Image 1 (cartoon, one colour):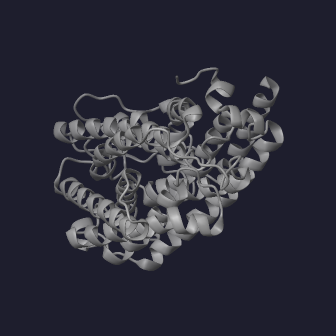
Image 2 (image 1 turned 120 degrees about the vertical axis):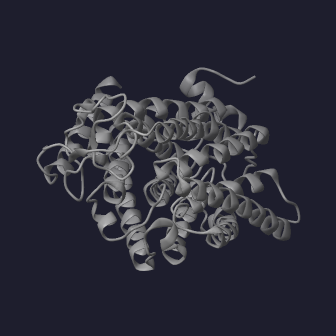
Length: 438
């Protein structure tokens, strides 16, 4: 097993070498005299960073953990926790440098590997030129972006819950983060990124986080296949209390996600907070009423899922739309994601266990496209373009799908992706971790 894991590590290095080949020589990020570091902005970004981390552990861990069967709850929680540790190390070692230094339009350079050259200052100094790093220390900006890099692969786990090997999950998330998340983050958010130059708007991660995670989740669910007994045996959530608590934590933490993406404690952050709250509430109600009408009862799982759908859909638009736009996005997300997580999944027959694609993929696509229609220049400083948003959605989805598929096939050939059928029936808690919830 160790030899196989070593092979995966070596393959990761080889895969990384390919995109690095067309990046610019590592001359380092552009450096300019920044404004004096603002204490208020820094304090807000420190809080936002903690809120976004709170979204993954414990928020997403509990949200997903409550929806699986009892025999898999510890394994599900473990995935979010282990991903948090894994991506933290990868981000500091190389991910941040490749995502947010200037490099080329397609990838950053190596000037911030192991955070080399980062300026450690108390009051003021020279910072990497980036719209979000003008009045805060680069260390805060780096850590804030780290929390986004952490939650994105963690979201994918909802699509393949209850059936993937832990070793395969770790290998996949490491490679996927470096070969999918990092390039797309550079394209959309880094100075000179080619999508940014094309006018693609993504305030807080509709494209980079949610479309990426949703598409990767769908591909993973299709490659792995359905859970044993899917469609034949009842697979109800084991504890919806955990799920509702997790969804509530996601809702609260999302203010760091969206309002924090303003990069400052200013009016735009305040507006992003308003639009986030409104869209989330509208989506929760829209999903609840859609379910009430079609299934005759409003469920706890439904209203929680609707709230998350609203959070997802408003993410790319939060700093670009007004109250009317937020209300439209929220209602649309609640209805469309309800259909995606129930009707579409059952119609096509794929096993997206916890609706990673149905909520994050579909919600991310919807929010990204509506940003192009509803963006208000006076709020976000940019005119929306449906064509530019469609370009961002299409390229991200295709690139993510292709690379995800290749990585899954590679890992399956080396160490295998899925636990055996008898192990799946026994439960991943005991089989993979030797522990059980009594």
